[in-house]
Length: 104
Image (tube, rainbow, N blue to C red; front, side, top):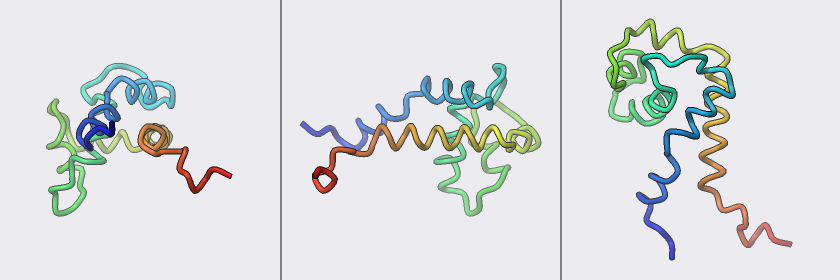
C-alpha cells in the first residue's frame, strides 16, 4: 500500500541522518546553537513564506536566538558539501530507482 505524501515526508526528514551528514562533511564540529537539521530545513523550507531569502528571514526561522552574523558565518565550503550530501540523501529516500522505463 502506498503511503500518503505526509507519511513519506515525515519518514524522509528524520533529523538524525542529517546531523550525521553534517559531521561527516565537516559542517558540524561541535554542538552549537544552530542544529544542522534545523539549518538545512530553515534554508530549504523556512523561507518559503518570505518575500526574499535573507539572513534575517533564516534567523527568524531558527529555534535558538542567533545573530545574522552567526548564520552568515555558516556559509563556507563545508555547508556546500553538507547540502549536497543532504539533498543526495533526500533523493535516495524519495526516488523510485526501479522505474519500469529503466529496466532493460
